[in-house]
Every structure is written in C-alpha cells, then in structure tokens.
Image (cartoon, rainbow, N blue to C red):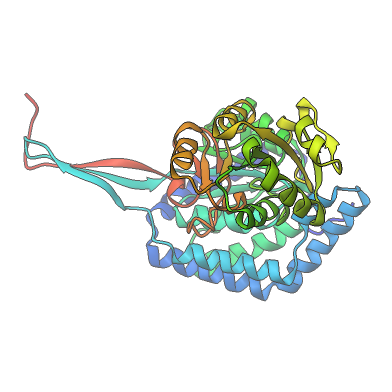
Length: 428
C-alpha cells in the first residue's frame, strides 16, 4: 500500500498519550480565543485548502489507487474520492462555519431570584473532542473547523483508506491555525494507521479526552459505543424510511422518492425503506417504483408489492433492518399512517424518517408518534444534514437522547456553565 505521510512509531500508547496531553494544553487558550481570531483562522484554513488543491488531489489519488487494489465497494470509493468541486465545497463549508455566530459565551438563559441573585446559563466549549472516522476525507475539514468554532481542541483519527488525503487536508488546517496565532495542537491528526490508536482513544487518553464522535460503518460505531470510557455522540445506522400517504401529490411523491434514495446512495440520510399507503397502491405504487427502476434502483418488495410490480426481488425480514448504502430499496405496502408508524417504530434506527402527504392530521400524527432524531414532511430524507439545517456543517448525526440529537453542529459541541451575580448575599 502506498503512503505519503505516515511515520512509524513503535509505541502507539506513548504517541497517543502525548497527543492527548498536547490537546489538553491547547484547550484553555482555545476556549478563551476571541471570535475574531477563530474566524480569521477558519478563513485561513479555507484559503489554504483552495491553494493546496493539487497536493490534496495527488494524495487522494494514492488513496484511490490503494482502494482499487483493495477492491473497495463503489459506495466506499465514492465517499473516498475528492474532485476539484468537492474541494471547493470543502472550503466553502469551512467559510460557512466561520460565518456562524460564535456560540462560546452566549447566554442561553438568565433570570433573577427573589433574593437578588442574577443567574445566567452560558455556553462553554465541551473540551477535547475525539473524532474517529472512515473513508470520508472531508470529515477532516468539517470536524476540525466545527470543533475550532466551538472552542474545542480535536483529535482526528481518520481511516487508513483515506490517510493520505486526510493528512494533506490537515496540513491546510494547521496553516490556518498558525496564521491566526492559535495553538497548532488545537487540531491534531493521529499520524499512524495502527488500530491500537483507536483503543487508546476509547480509553480516554488518561482523562484528556472528553467526548468521542465516530463516523463510519456499523462495526466501528458498535465498537466505540461498547468500549468507550467517555461519552459518545453517534448513530449506529441510518435505516431511514419514506412513507407515501394516499393524500400525497403523485408528482411530488415520485420526485422525493427518487431523490431520497438515489441522489447519493452512500450517505446515512439516504432512504432505505419505502412505505406506501395501501390506499394509494392503485395510483402511486407503480409510478413511484417505475421511476426508481428507471433511475437504476434495485427494488426488494414484499408480497403485496411483488403482485403488482414483478421487476423486483422478494424482500426478506433482513431487508427491513438493512442499511444498504447502495442503489437498493426495500418497499412495503402499509395500512395508512398507522401501519407506517408501526413499521418504523419496529425497524427504524431512529435517524431520519419522512412523510409525503397533504392531509394535515396525518402529518401531525406522524410527527407526534415517531421518535426519531429527524422527521421531514414533503421533503427528501437527504436533507438530514447539518449544512442543510443552516449549521454550516456537521460532524455527524446523533440518535441518542442525551445532550446532542440530530445533526451535531457548533451548538451541540458546547456545554454550559452558570454565572451567578450577587451583591453580598449569604445563605441562611
């Protein structure tokens, strides 16, 4: 395997301990850095990414050749691949984060007590963030920029498949930090593909790591959730559902179904299961499925759907639990919104669900009764993205219920503290 950047280290534990200590040392100066300095650093990073396009593409070419030799799947290679357009998008994403309101120091709430105390709840950085990710080199830029905006040092551990690309991008981020006179250790990339580095991060780096965010496949996320000794923001899978109600406009239903599945099949917000109201089978089923097949989608259908649409593969119980990340969708007829809710609550990973409907009561029931992080009405599931939410970017989608849920953007990367102002009060 070709590599351009990795430096062999005999003692991964010592390497990671040093990275943790340096990240902790960078935490205080970063937490008190002015909004203007962080903004300047981010703009410097975006400019450096654009200047470094040739270097980044050359590094990415090495990763792509390695991926081809390893016979990685098409969806994996798509996530790995960088192009001039994707590099521009990466720089634009950093600029968008730079323009977000700085959350650090924001007063979330304030109130006065009868004894004259004035209490404020104020946003503060979370601390040192660890991000463990696979294949997507753009996560290096997104995670680094978001954590910086929220005042958090970050330790990035990218996948071995994207190691060269991530290193080239990371060099641009460090350039922006140095130009704004912020600690270079505020954004560190683990310089080894030794898997033991992940184990050290899961242990917490001797108390120097405050939260871990995994981005990758089920095996990675499961390992992090099972072994981490620090809090984790994550989702295990994106088994996202699209329900088309009998009240849905047909043209809208077709457009949303094709986009939700086929725009980018390898992202966690891609629809994996299509549920169609049995009352709409005679009007909506065939046009929607024909449009999906025309777009190149393989259809796994339940018995009722197969009876009407023969150009499909019989679905098994496994299909309802499967995150395909490919041009495949499972399709089922359900008895109205009640059947859709029952199916989703049985099989969903509680990531993203969408309904196409014109009946207001049906939509409200869907929104009220389904417990997933993101719910959409008359819109594609592919909008499950921090950038599309106006967050500038996201590190990932969290499906847990503690602290962060849904897109993890700048605000979700902060905690808070209380500031209490008095005038000499003592407690009886």
